[in-house]
Image 1 (cartoon, rainbow, N blue to C red):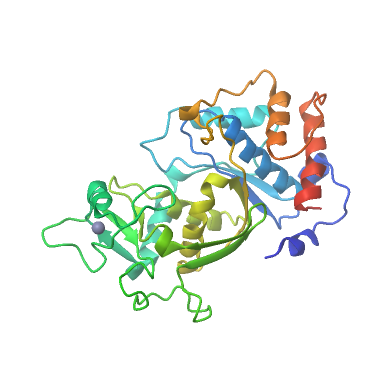
Image 2: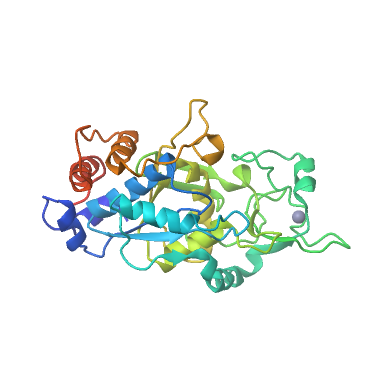
Length: 334
Ligand SMILES: [Zn+2]
């Protein structure tokens, strides 16, 4: 699964966007997977541009998946708005758009497959916070393991969690077989992967998140499960997304292993931050994209990816023709 292996299959080495679109080799499948919680903004545009360029640089397919699995956060009309904005910026998905809210049967089937790796949890958010075990990377409390050995008497299941080996007291007797093909000294909860932008990443799941939720108390499937199922079902080879999802990657790789699904390659682009260093979102002051000047917005997004596209680029076609070789020079392709 190295980048070199994919690149060798790509054919001649003088790309332009029209060729890249016409001569898809089918070896590379990428995707952009926005959550429809609002319109596309400067931060999400950067992730869209990066995933699109990487797919086209490898003469691959670029899929669009609407991650509307968290229906409580979905804003009506936002998905349609995002799709229209991407089209206005020259990014057309290859193939049908996939909607997570319509794929619940797939998530249910994967959940059923996990069998004894999953356990019912009766804990409220407050009970977990009050346990003060430790804080996870994202600021959430690490699950203290209260319901691991069964629900406490008189309590009903609220959520379903995935057992992470090493999270229990006296780690090592977990009875999990997730690392059965790995070396004995490489614990199943130690996840290593190479990120094409961020470099080598190591995360210990027990220390960083503990047993994590797959089915939420409100009945919705957790993002982590849906993403893993969808990436495999859509045969995604390369995940290119914002670095805010870097800390989700180890959980996703662990789930891939348990479900015996392939692990894609990863590339996490830097997150666009506001002046206070907060990730740009509607809540932290992201302004709407200027749809009257898409090329200007694209040039700005490219700069955030360290791609120096000339300021005087005036058409969408010229932008993509300029950005593609710049991306390729840095991240490979064909
Ligand atoms: Zn619990």
